[in-house]
Amino acid sequence: MLIRKNIEGNVPSSEITPKQHFLSRRNLITGAAAAGVGVLALRSVPGLIHPDAVHADQKLEAASSKYTVPDAQTPFSKATTYNNFYEFGTDKSDPAKNAHTLHTRPWTVQVTGLVKKPLTLDIDSILKYRPLESRVYRHRCVEAWSMVIPWDGYSLSEFINFVQPLPSAKFVQFLSDDKSSDMPHKPFGYNWPYSEGLRMDEAMNPLCLLTFGCYGEVLPNQNGAPVRVVSPWKYGFKNGKSIVKMNFTDKQPRTLWNDMAANEYGFYSNVNPKVDHPRWSQAHERRIDSSAFPKTIPTLMFNGYGDQVASMYAGMDLKKYY
Ligand SMILES: Nc1nc2c(c(=O)[nH]1)N[C@H]1C(S)=C(S)[C@@H](COP(=O)(O)O)O[C@H]1N2
Ligand SMILES: [Mo]
Image: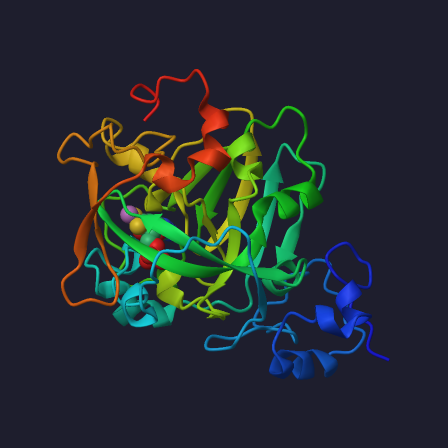
């Protein structure tokens, strides 16, 4: 019998209840070949691909989610060719052309700082820790364009509960991969690695998605493979791609865009039509959908997610904490 252990070292219920299988048949077959392999933490074995590794173009099984918005979706072809991922070039078309050089297996995520379980975990064990949901989220870039994307993942809070932050942890910092060998087009003049962060209550908000896929497939490299964060009530740049480290801290962490231009990019970066960027209005957005001529629509407070998130900012001056 196949016994595969999850990141807690237990046999996951997916091994017992067939309907809880949440990866494609192809992967389960690959997994079967790896019978008995524990996946608690990758003891770094250079060059070894995890036997359960999930690869690009592979389907992910994900249940539908109550957090899905009804807006018309951006086509896959646009969401994967119009990207911000500066490590692969600053033009919107660069990541789709250049990100194929990113090696997404083997891949580990290091958990450090104020946490009970400072572990280095293999990406496939993180991916399999919880069943995935498909959540169609609005995605609002600070540059005043937006998309509607079905992301596949589970709430970041589930992962954070697993690693158990200490009471002193007030923020979590996300660091993106920075390997120059995988990123020959990485421009100079930026304070790499890409860093973003959330206050602990924001990170624990169920809307905040630890994301492994989109459109029911493993994330394309240009969209942040193999794992990224998506916090849909914030501007897109808060959503660090290709994460290799989560660091729990008692102080607000540095972020790349705050380092570059603190007066333009604050730490909170909640979508707010009433607080303009110093160089342009945030009141409207160009919605990138299936039409050849994207419509301009009003931007909603908290990107339309106010019911779920506004209470976290009660009493805060959102002009000051932009
Ligand atoms: N590591 C890293 N993460 C990043 C970026 C980046 O340049 N590097 N760009 C951000 C910005 S500005 C946006 S709008 C989103 C874009 O995500 P998408 O290409 O999947 O739409 O990723 C964010 N995460
Ligand atoms: Mo963005």
